[in-house]
Image 1 (cartoon, rainbow over the protein chains, first blue to last red):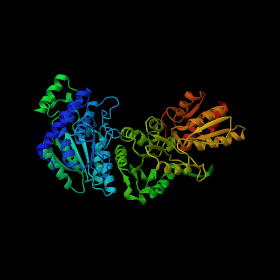
Image 2 (cartoon, each protein chain N blue to C red; image 1 turned 90 degrees about the vertical axis):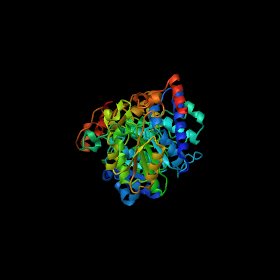
Image 3 (cartoon, chains in turn brown, red; image 1 turned 180 degrees about the vertical axis):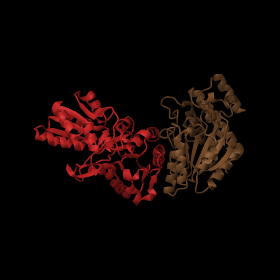
Image 4 (tube, chains in turn brown, green; image 1 turned 180 degrees about the horizontal axis):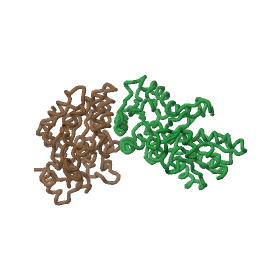
Length: 272
Length: 310
């Protein structure tokens, strides 16, 4: 572990600030689920991944598929802070002619490994990358970040079966379990619970953690690398809207931009 | 055309796949529990380590191919046309065409000539669906020679391709090593009484009609479109200028397929009446392939009638 916990927590906070900056500038976008994965993104990009921002398409790099593509602001903030592109670009999120589309576009944004946005598709793509690594005898790892509402999509379970069949121990799935989707609590809309038991029965090694706790994320990712012959799924219990008091645990902040007053309050809270 | 030598284009595909796969180790093949029908089993037998049977899960089939393409693999993906273009449409749209990934979707069992399985399995909308996707090249080959050429050719070009293949064994039309080009149709004969535009299985029916009409003193030309997108505008305009009547015939819904693609060219470049033959916006039904071609009036007899009475 090259970066210490305090540094990673600070980076996660900086990611949150840039998420709010982007969504405020765009006056649209998805802050809730972006804020819930900020700690995961910080640990992945600033501690775990073997990547090179100067060479984003390096063929031996670790890959990340943000299957819950609407949380692009979290990915863009992280990539900018990591140095893939200038941080000023974040001001152009969702604007005409911007590279930062509403959902991640791998052909436009350096560092985006897969185009996503239509939910349920990313895990299959991550499988394809992990299978390719094995075919080519390469050591890179593939991380797929899924929403807990997203796993209501049937394709996720088609892909889960395949990840087990092909013994993809170079694949690590992270489920952002913030418990909310657009229409309300996931257990009320269409419960995917028990998520851990489901992935276990599909043949995954399952690790339950607090996904807003940097130390637990670090430990889970370390453990995932030791699992052989099967894929790992980290169920990350998180708070939607984490870090901004009035956004926390509120489904309405799934896809809404703050007004000026709310923006100022959010930034003030995050800069404390 | 050799009426006695019949080969289904899916069979030609399976054989050609083995050939290109032997030459290019980046080629991987993915199927969804239909490898004995799609003929990818020929490749699977020789290269099991590069063959992936994803089971009855077409959405995942397409997504997996997309992921592999991002890592430099050249995935050839096969299942029945109805499950590829229909079931996995959104995956083809968002995971393959939008990022313009190098995936070759070779869909077999297209059209009513699937036969006995009936309407659920007779894909009549795939050309239409695939044609509206940006970045997608849409092809439909008519015989063994052309299909083998197409597989070799699409393995060399970058970007997504949808290739429509047939279950039914059909006559070998072209001699070995005939030259084709993606986006260029092949004109057979130079009659000026009518042009019959055709693709896939209806090319052989059109050629049969050409012979029958010839015996009646009517000279028609047949134009075989191996590619529907990009469509060969030049040959459409040329035939519109040179021949009295224009007819299109396809084993596909008349909405959105070859006839529509030709109409779009005629409308904007050289307005002229086109008689579109195809499945007239209805679902298919069970029966023998030959019976169905006759029933839905896309066989040689129906083509002759249209030419005579148009």
